[in-house]
Image 1 (cartoon, rainbow, N blue to C red):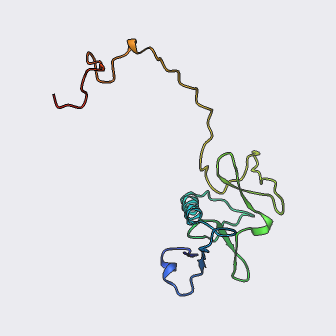
Image 2: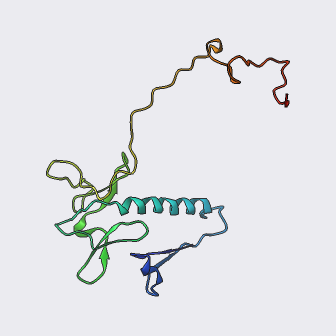
Image 3: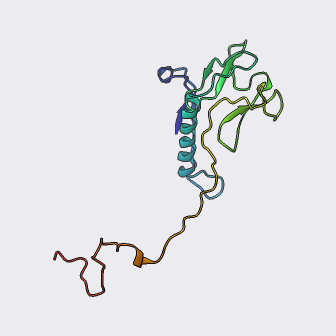
Length: 166
């Protein structure tokens, strides 16, 4: 399977566009990867792309990212040598397990980078929301208080043929 590392759709046409080549071993007994898992990873990348397209306008050291990768949308900062780096000045992006949003860490640390108000500096919006557990529904099992499945006044009996045209 091929994955182009393009910054735009037009970049895919370029002969210098970097390409990831995923080689899938046919033997899945020991170290193989199932096609199901590969497709799952591509699907996750698609979700992350959608999330990255709506990323916040974060600027680390007052410098916004130069570009975002096309498929998974991590932000990249252009370095002086012309290369791109996803972790500028020692910052890293981590996923908040509570909501799936990416946030930034302090330089060379796993601690969250915080705003002046004390909240995390997020790169993306939340991907999901964890709400309270739903209350279990109670079911009234007294069928005499409800219409039958077949409508009012048409309760089924054992002698009735439910499948005939009559």
